[in-house]
Image (cartoon, rainbow, N blue to C red):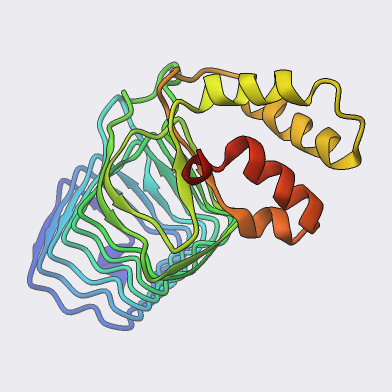
Length: 248
C-alpha cells in the first residue's frame, strides 16, 4: 500500500492492513490506534516520535525495524499492542515505551531492549540472546524500573538483564534476579582470585566484563543455571556457589 510508505503527523484509526506488504516505510510524529497490521510485512520500518495504541502486529515481519529511536529526546510509545508471533529479529529498540504489550512467541533472537520503559507486558516462548539493558547511559532516556512483566511461559537462553530494577517481574522457573549485582560480582571475584580451575577463569572473565561500563550499585542481573550447565556441570556448581541468590 503506497499510502503507508511515508507518514508524517498522520492520524490513523480503525484501519485493517492485515497482510499488507510495505518495506522501508518511514513514519514520523504519527498517532495510530485500533489498527491491524497482523501478518503484515513491514521490514526495515523506521518510526520516530510516534504513538501506537490498541493495535495488532501479530505475526507481522518487523525484521530490521526501528521501533524505538529516541529522536530529539522523543520516544515512541506502544500501548496495548500485540506482537504475538511477530518476527522482530534485528529490530532496534531504544528508549521506547511498551505498556500492556504481548510478545508471546515473538522472534526476538538477538534483540536488545535499550533503556526501554517496559510495563504490564507478557513474554512467552523461547527467548534467545535477548538483552534488557537498563543502565544509565549518556544521551539516552533515564531508565525506568521494569514493572509488572510476566515471563512465566518463556524459556531463557543467554538472556541478560543489565542493571535492572524489577518491580513485580515474574521470571521462568529456576531463574532469579541477583540483587545488588555489582557488589555481589566484586565479592565473587575476590573469592575466586586464588581458584586456578578453568571454571573459575571463565566465571572471573564473565564477572569482570559485567563490571565494565556504567551501572548502579543496587541494579540486578539475571542468574540462569541453564546457561552454565550448557558449558559444564562444574561451572554451574561454581556459579551457584557465588551467584545463586536463592542459595543464600
